[in-house]
Image (cartoon, rainbow, N blue to C red; front, side):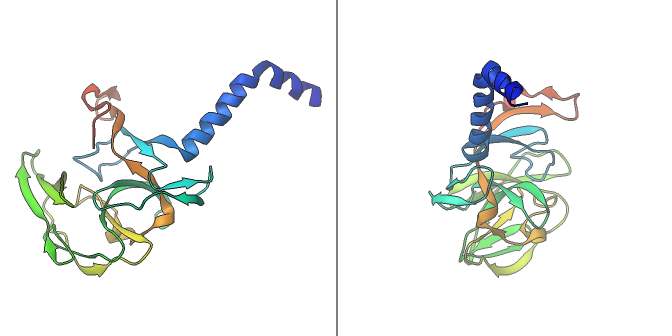
Length: 213
């Protein structure tokens, strides 16, 4: 058995080392994440593969959530990927509230620390309504359908974040799973790597390749 393993190693050592290094890289440095649902429409579509920077906030021990070195904290407007213990799924959402923020929403209009965000209507496929929401000085698209969603003022606790999907009426976010603990956050996404159209035989969407989020 030992001799057989030795032969396998001698004949494939470069390939084995490559696989080990690739696994370490994808675990601790960067990876891509498939998006199977529409909770982040219109920013992210079903079938998008988004780039995940796993060193955006921490240097972590590979294959764990253990932080070896803190590099930064998530900011309002960041699109984060996190392993939710509550839902037992890996989720993609937008950070709306950071620790200490008081966040409220009425009729799909957000208020942060008593200040209402700015909104501007843009074209959208019926019956949805798309708006440009200005969060921390940066505009991003949100989608609203027929419901008038809201929640009373809540204070984001230390070490946690309030996250929402850009598809505000179709997202299991902090309104369902509660605040997101910082240690669950895997990384930050700012670009689509590639995209496949689930509704058209999984054909590529070239116009979305390398698109900024």
